[in-house]
Length: 197
Image (cartoon, rainbow, N blue to C red; front, side):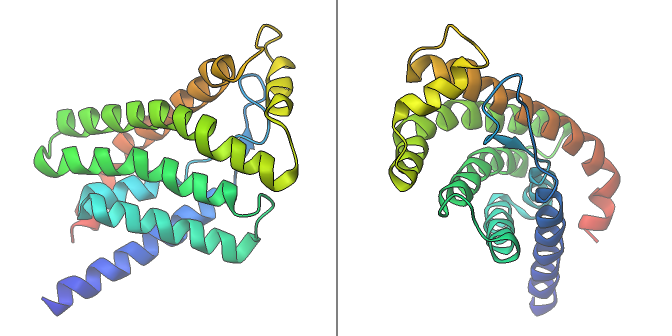
């Protein structure tokens, strides 16, 4: 029992470290969203942990990843970006891991990733509108109109927050969920024997 617990802790630590390293390679998608939205593939090792050890382990790895990144790089968003990263990651990883826990098949993995992706897209929009952007604006003295203006530079027809999340935030999260899911499906099959060893 103690040996299993130790192995789980070690695996969580290793996957958190890999996720933290991947988080360093963030890049924007300026054709779809303002540049403060950055894409990375750090959710791949988090999902590997959720699939191999359960959804709670995935959320723990997500939390450790964000804390390690905060310790290494500090913050330029007053902690708001890091908190948002954790919440968004957990919204994606927990449903995916939970569904896979009860259906350990390729279909189960695909269903879990799909549900997790939908959760990320829908809840991501709501959290951006009601939590993240207002908090970010308050912390840096930026009105909501400033974010809409950034989106207007990409899509001139955007003139309110609803259109901002519909045409910028939702597509950004869709691209992220799709790419991360594809990589996870490819990698998990190959690494599964090691993760369960």
